[in-house]
Amino acid sequence: MLTNLQARDVATVLHPYSNLATLPSQGTLILERGQGVYVHDVEGKPYIEGMAGLWCNALGHGVEELVEAAAEQMRKLPFAHLFTGKSHDPAIALAEKLKELAPMKAAKVFFTSSGSEANDTQMKLVWYVNNALGRPQKKKIISRIKAYHGVTIASASLTGLPNNHIDFDLPLSSVRHAGCPHHWRFGHEGETEAEFSARLAAELDAQIEAEGPETVAAFIAEPVMGAGGVIVPPEGYFAAIQPILEKHDVMLISDEVICGFGRLGEWFGATKLGMKPDTVSVAKALTSSYIPLGAVIIPDWIDEALVAQSAKIGVFGHGFTYSGHPVAAAVGLKTLEIYERINILGHVTDITPHFQKRLKALGDHPGRRSPRSRACGAVEVVADKAAKRAFDPKTAVAAKVVAFAQDEGLIVRAIGDAVAVCPPLVITEAEIDELFDRLGRALDRGE
Ligand code: PLP
Image (cartoon, rainbow, N blue to C red):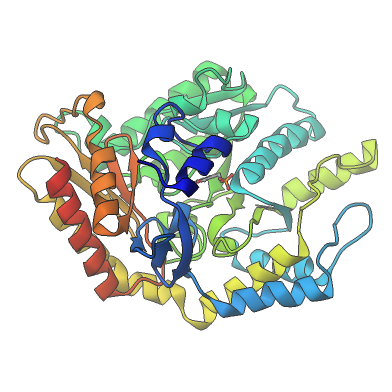
């Protein structure tokens, strides 16, 4: 039986990423307020936000300094844009800061309002720059099966999940998908992680050769795959991939929309995992998700190609009304200042072993759970772990676990057979214990 608010909700809001057939009878969890790692629903029931919203609310709720930064900027200059000869201080200061932190030698920052817009921009830049460099045939972008890069036409094409393609007439014809680095699921019998990495690199090499290296422009990768099921790359993966890209002059785009700003204990996942990206996309934790903001950080050679192209054809015809929105930029700057002041990277490094220990312990369950983690993680629930046999999809075990978790006062997310956990970065050890106690009970009830 739906409450009045739930009934109004399902009658009027077209919900993203939802089963639109079952939602009207199931209703939605309607949240009202939050403090720290907790959120409360409209009935006043508290939940641990075990997904930091959508992998984004790094500092948790109730950070007054961020509210103040937004209010102050709104009072001073609530809107200004960066088109045709205009700029403002918050965008300049934030671009400078992002350049300083970037995992490669960065030249400039292009602002967006989301991760999808950032990856859409990446794809347009790849095409535009290769035209500018006089190699118009070098346009294909290789992503990976189970990758998540967003939902706009270009970024949804890069995403490697069937739901984002089927009946949307995607992916675009210039996108290819390479193998997924999920060792437990796709490794051959007896294959070590390093051997699996070498095989994926060899397969990528063969794929690029088959396409024609002169037609392949870029490879895009999340350091740790998030929405595909929290897939931590196997040992040596990027070290094996990188030389293949270099050999074929294929640029590397690191999609840091989840991993950026501390999730793996460093500013960027790329540095943690030994990637040498040409460009990066960021969003989410850039403002701790208090306000939408994304960005693409580019190196000199792309910037120079863009400038040269403008000298030839005029205006660089790309930009959003909200590119570099001053309120979002002010909140972004304040967020980065807070991360530095509270040493968020040190905190994540300190708590990660405890997080991993508790997550791994869930996986020690008799034969049915496969855990994987960094400072985010997932437990894959399977019918038979030894045989790697999945549950019948109709049983929707992970979704049941998520529903039981909600009952226990914990928000987590089902991704296929995996139950994903990605708490705010500020979570304490005691809160991690509470989170996993609740998740353990939900798993016991759901399986
Ligand atoms: N890239 C990654 C790695 C993501 O996880 C997401 C969203 O979850 C996106 C891009 C898309 O970001 P947005 O939802 O802000 O468009």
